[in-house]
Structure formats: structure tokens, C-alpha cells
Figure (tube, rainbow, N blue to C red):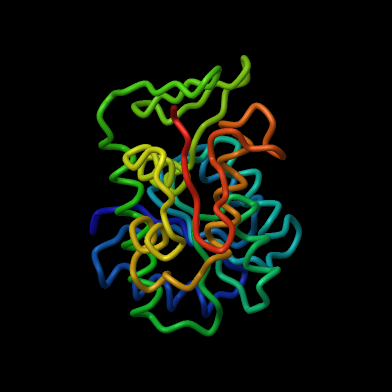
Length: 229
């Protein structure tokens, strides 16, 4: 993972310098972009393993950039934000980010989040070829693609790992904390908003009617269960 290529997208030169120093010190290859438009251009021309993306960008904002990246970019995106409100965090995750870090942040925390995101991405890439069917929904674990009623969706690394974990424990209610610890890590056990966002995203991709889930069901106040029978 130390050879991973990271794109840092931030309009503040000082933040870019700090991030470059921290990341290159850990052996990562770093490129920079000052705007969302520059980021999209670089993603088209180069390969990156992860994007660090500031939420408050001039021009094309961070959330809009994240959504645009997700149209073609399947590797992890970590959003950097100065806002700590739950709505802003949910907005970042809902736009396609895999994680977020609130400014000002400590370098050890950022590096830990980055390593965790890269581990999830590597686990998704190393998945054994397998096709799972839930009714009319076909899930290809090798290509990370889902086909539901003729519509094809791609899974992000975090969506994939969450779905893979649920598939490994079919028809069993898995508590929130256990899911968060297994997919994101023990430091995320209390971050239930992560689950709400990613479960909703998965439902849009695997459920014929996401508003009335048939396969990925909620057990109120407890957790989630993937129904395969």
C-alpha cells in the first residue's frame, strides 16, 4: 500500500504542502489538483489509488466533484471538511465518499483512515470470482457489478465490502457495531450514520424497490439482515 498513488484536491497551498509531506514521508506517490475541474482532468489521464478531496472547493464544489468522480472512478475517496455537523458528513458519504476527515486533523488519524480505505479497496479487488443472485438481482463479486432488472450498477470499494460481509452472514441480523467494526474498523463502531448512508446506497443497487427493501432489511435498533432465502 505504501506505493499507492494519491491525488490531493485542495485549493489551499499550505494544506497541499502539509499533505504532500505527510504522504510522501510514508512512501505514497502524490499528485495535486487545486480545483474539482483539475481533479477530473487528472483522473482521466492518470491512475490513482485514492483521492483526498476538500469539500469546500471554488468553482465545482467538493460534493459535485465527488459525484462526477464516482461516475468513472471506483477507488476510495476521502473527503476533507471543516464542518462537523452530521448532515455534512452524511452529504459527503451520500455523494460517494468512502470516508471523511474533519479539519483540523491530526496526521496519524488521516494516515490511519487512508490505510483503512486502501485495505478495503485491496480486499474488493482480490475477491474471488463469484456470482450471487437475489431474485432478479445478479451480483458479480469479481467485477463488483450489480444488475437489477436490466440496470447495471458498479459498487464502490466500501459498498462492496459491506455487501460481501452481509453475504458471508446470510439471514442473520448483524448488529450495527459489529458491521461497523468489520467493514470500517473498531474506531468507527459508534458511527451509525456510515451504515445508514451505505445501506441506502446498496438498496438502490440491489433492491427492485429500494423504498420497500426485500433483501437488505432493517432490524430496528439492532442492525441489518441480508435475506437470501
